[in-house]
Length: 78
Image 1 (cartoon, one colour):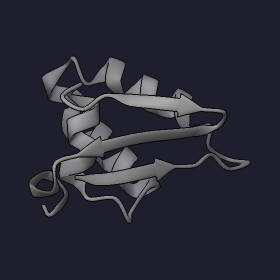
Image 2 (cartoon, one colour):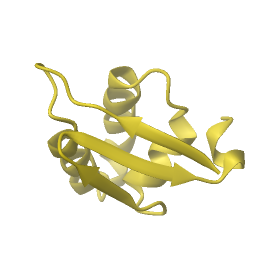
Image 3 (cartoon, one colour):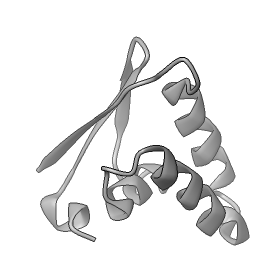
């Protein structure tokens, strides 16, 4: 299991950004661009792990300004 913590900054409120991307991920034609935005914002997190959150296949939780989630390791390598 791989654990990730996505913190906010003065430029990005991570809980809002993730909620926005999950909402937009319902539209298949928008998925590549949304994933690119999230992956560009958090370049150290594998795209496959981020996509699990955006597809709601992995639950996330919010603690303050931080988004935390866990995914199976096989999703973290791509």
